Each structure stands twice: as structure tokens, then as C-alpha cells.
Image 1 (cartoon, rainbow, N blue to C red):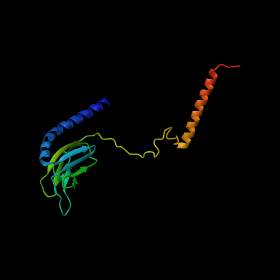
Image 2 (tube, rainbow, N blue to C red):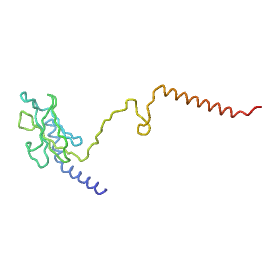
Image 3 (cartoon, helix red, strand yellow):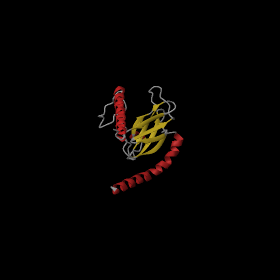
Image 4 (cartoon, rainbow, N blue to C red):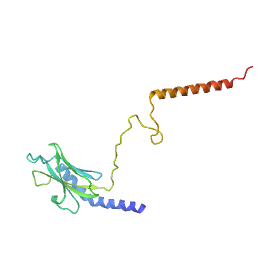
Length: 181
């Protein structure tokens, strides 16, 4: 177990070291072009504000996700940009762990708007599944076996408890007094 953790850490270190030169170059390209790349789990997303919409087709532009073995925009996994005049974005889901390059091209040009590298890690975030909540609050007991009683039943039960407490107090007080003849 310890060996596998060390191998995983060293593998991540080597990956980060290999991507470091790309990461140092990417911020300069990012600042000049205005693209922003982020990852969440196995999803890579890119946002830009540099593209304008083609009035005929309605397309803003295209993003391409390239692996380290791919060298051009055409070879990558493409996704169409969507958005408004303020911001355009796209995303790629189910991306396997590794180092990728994201290239964005607007619909009206052949020059890339921006190029940026991104690392997708092997860790995934847990999925939260929403469940319906009980209509009358949380049911206690053994696996929800306890019934949710109404106000009349609770009132009668409370009254019986009060009578039992009073009867016990009367009985104990009566026993504490000495017997008189």
C-alpha cells in the first residue's frame, strides 16, 4: 500500500514537472488572448470573450482539446463555443487524466484566439445524490419503524405520563409518613 502511494506521488510529480514549462508559457498567452481554462474532476472548460457570432450559422467559434501526441487544432477533440457577446465557453467531459492543450479559434479567423495547457488529475470528486425528505420530519426508531403520531395521541400520552408521575409521588409520600393508629 505504501509503495503504491509513493509511486502515485512520484508519477504526479513527474507529470507536473513535465508540464511546468508549458504552464510558464501559458499565462502569457492567456493574458494576451483572454482565454481561461479550468478543470473540475474529469471536465475541462474554457471561456473567452474574444469571439463574435456568425450571423448566418449562429456559431461563435470552436475549441479543441489536444493530447500531448497531437500537434494541430484539427487533430484535437472539438467542441463548439456557446454564449453571448460578453462571454463564450465550451467544455469537454469524461477527460482521462493527463496533460492537455486547449486551443480556441473564433468562427471568423484562422488564427487561434489562445492556447493554454491544463492538467487533469486522477482524483475525482464524489457525486452527491439528492434524496426526497420525509414530509413530516425525520422518522426515528429502527429503520423508520416508529410512527408519527398526531396531537391528540401525544396529548393523551402526555396526560397518562403526568397521572403516573402524580400517583407515584402520592404513593411515596404516603409511605414516608409513619402509620398512625
